[in-house]
Length: 81
Image (cartoon, rainbow, N blue to C red; front, side):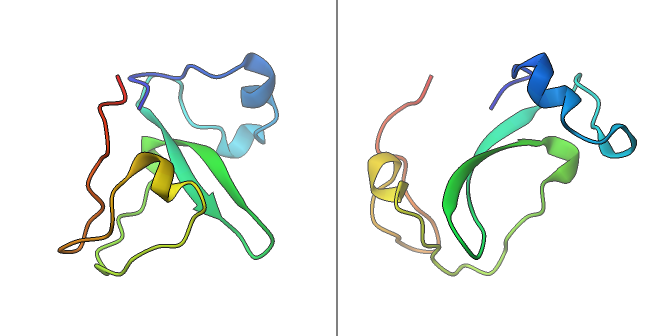
């Protein structure tokens, strides 16, 4: 999590102006996927949607960061910052 925008100006400028989020909010690095691939996304807080399903997710980077899915969540393997 970045307390405010910490990516490149080029990345920010690539977002269409009408949907560009303000930089003065938290941004998160998320494990994401689409129909074709898995990736890490950089997402503003205003665009986050909570997942309350309690179901496990599939992403090839999960084992590098988290332990096994237990009691509805993945325990963090180590402190990131």
